[in-house]
Image (cartoon, rainbow, N blue to C red; front, side, top):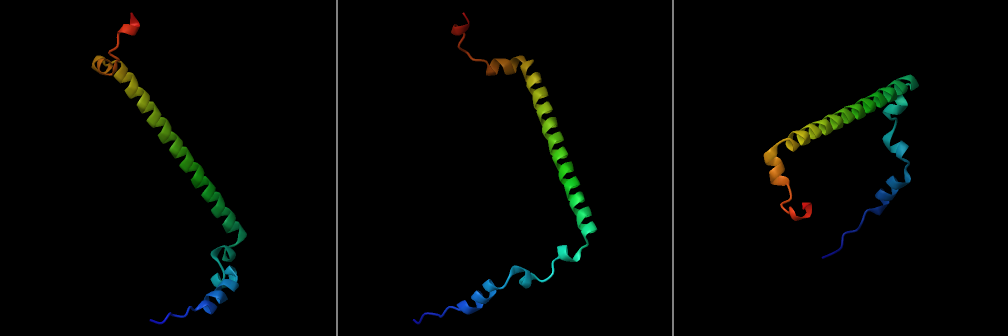
Length: 91
């Protein structure tokens, strides 16, 4: 079996070219500065809204967990099941 020759010159040619020349003009280059500013502001607003939503969800989950714990602490069967049976240390 003969070994296949590698085609390194074509790959080397692409490595020498700058990324800007390969891609051509980008959308960022085509948009005006005020449109870019508006898009960045909208992005920041969306990120802030997402953070606020996550914070509210976390707070609601914590409150629900506290309510459930309080309900369980007033339930006698739950307390009996989860209490330690070693009463000697309480004498």
